[in-house]
Amino acid sequence: MRRLLQASNGPQVVEINGQWYQLSPVPGTNTPPASSTTTTTTNAPIAVLPGIGSYNPFITNTVGVPPPVPSMSTSAPLSPGHMFGAFGQQCLVPTGVQQCEDTITYVTDQTGTNTQGAVSCSENSDCCLCKQIKCGDQQGTPCDSVQFSGIKAAYGVKDIEINGASAAEIAAGGAGVSKLECSGESSCRNTYILANRSLSEILCNGRHSCQDAEIVVENPSDGINIQCAVTSACEGLKLTINFNVTEETRKGILPAACASTTTTEFDIGRINCVGVDGCKGMQFTVNNYGCDTVLIDTIECRSGSCVDAQWNFYGVSAVGIKSCHLSSDTVLSAASGLSRCFRDVQSLNCLQNNACANKIQTIINPVDGFKMECVKEGACANSHYTIQLTADKLMPTPETILILCNSINACQGLTVIIDNQNAQELQVEIVCASTGACDNAVFETSGAVVLPEVTCGKPEECANCVFNTQHCGGFDPLLAAGGNPEPVYVADPWAINGGSPFVNV
Image 1 (cartoon, rainbow, N blue to C red):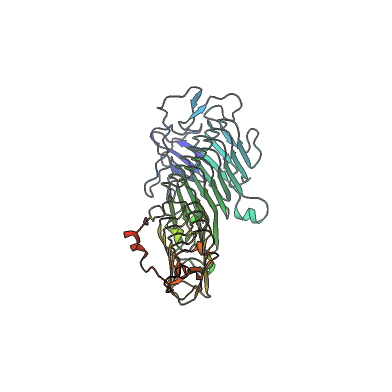
Image 2 (cartoon, rainbow, N blue to C red; image 1 turned 60 degrees about the horizontal axis):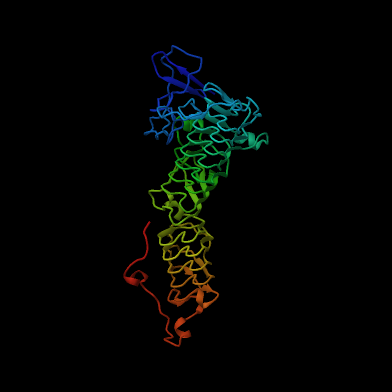
């Protein structure tokens, strides 16, 4: 429940679920409209929301500096056929089909043609003028679905609330998870959305649909998926997902210690940044306030889709990434936050031409069964990868690694150093299965590593390829030419052509 009050000669305050918060005006925007209820009380209890990042662009957060809110100034010239919305945005003048025809109307799953547990804004600017959009509540009927399919359907609305079912309600079979879908062009652009409990999907499937929005998700459904599928779908989006939020963590009380035997695992499913500029400049943050582990199944960045994106992972307990599907222009540094793609991962998937080419990377303690897949032309060409297993890695049994080079020149000029510092054995399989796939490649191992051979179907798949001073696939190009039968091992690939061809990211 939210109540907005204007104290006499004082700041506006808003009540959210029994807590009061002070509103701070945002330069260049309209102040949220006050309700008809007023009070002369000046000493209402004021709290600040805990955690990292902002929960509402109008709430003063003294924990650090709140991120800037997308500017939507009413000083800009009003476009023909438009009027200003409740938050300073420009909405189409109502034509009689919109659910909100003024800036004091609100939409819920109990208004208009909406059905219980579902809100749909399907017309152009359907809910753009609304002062609030709300689906479900935390004490009664949970929300199942919120859909914004019209062009600018909820554009600029900074008070959107989705209240899903609790975990107990879902376990009891009385409710399901909720879904947010922004499929119309600019349908959720410049919005502020708070999703409480059990959100299972964020689908930004319209052009610019979630651009410059801020979405905060608390205690999502296990396996929540995020999709940014088309042009600029999530460009500039601030997406924060908070796990293990309780009444104690809201008060800033965090676990003093975590017992590893009592923790469980929460998953974030796939984060798909596949549209042109799909996640450009996005700020993605995971806050883990409890002892349970949070693991991201897959982050996928196609060419140009994750430029200038920032990935932040904070937690009392671990936040990890299982697998990364990356493009050649994805920044993999600690500054971008994606350096985690190279620690404790299940796979490195290079699924586009030159996706992992010309890189220098170290992969630390990959999980048992780790796969490095170079499956497109030049996918891993001219790179230098070190795969390192540390002495303190828990390895009760021997582990395996598979490196696949099964496209034209996929691993041409690739160097892979496999360093097992652990006492347990590591079994490695390397397969080269296309023309030039492993030409001039070098594979070296140290420590307890078993690499009996590098598999090559034909000599032209492994020309001048060596592993631990042996010729890949058993093919000796000098013997075939009638020359020196002794194997030739390139001890220092960096010295070839006078220096390193690699780009350090």
